[in-house]
Length: 252
Image (cartoon, rainbow, N blue to C red; front, top):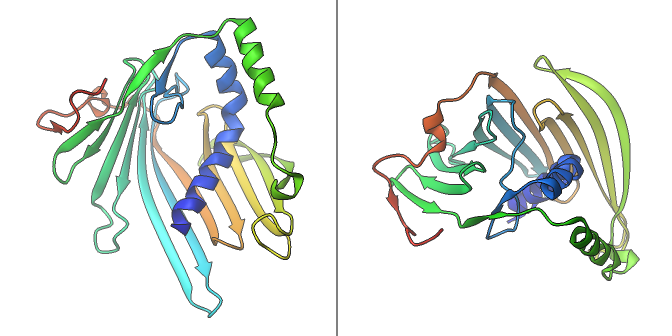
C-alpha cells in the first residue's frame, strides 16, 4: 500500500498547481463531474498531444535492502479536452501489456475504464453540473474557510519556492519546490518528517512534465512526462471500442 499512498500524495501536490485556474473556470461554465469522487472531468483545451509517463520509485529499507519500482503510462489528449490514459502492467515480465485504460470525455460527459485483457469495460457515473450563481459560490467558499481545522500539530508546515523556468523536451516549464514539514507527533514520529517535491509545470499543456519527490518514509520518486506527438489524436481513442462488454450498462 505504501507505493499507492505515495503516488496519491504526489498526484495531490501536482493537482494544486492548476487548481485555482480550474476552479475559476468551473464557476463560469458547466462542467462534467465524476459522481464517485466529485472531481471534474474538464481538461485544458486546444493543446492536443500523445505522451509517455514513466514514474520510478527507489526505496532503501532499514536493513539495507534496495527496492526499485517503475510504472509506465501512455496519455492522449485531444483539442476538446478528451483524455485516454493507458496503464501498463507492473509485472517485470510483461512491461508492454496494457492492464487498463481510462477514457474521459468532458464534451459528452462520459467516462469509462477498459480492461483489454478480457475485453470488458465499466461506465463511470457522471453528470453535468451547472455553474453556481455568485452568491451561492460565495457562501460555499465562506463555509469551507470557516470549517474547523485540525490541531496545528497534525498539520504539515508548507513552504514554496519559485525555481524559475526550464526547457524540457523543447517545452517551457515553470518550476516550484514544495517543502512539507510534519512536526513531531503528527504521525507518531518523535522527530519532524520532511518531504520535498519539485514540480516543473507547462502552462501551455496544463501538465507537469517533470516531478521529483524526496520522502524518507516512502522513497524517492521521479516522474517524467515525455511528449511524443503534438498532433491531433485519432478520435476513436476516446470512444468505447466495439466488441467490449459493458459490465454496468445501467449506469449513467
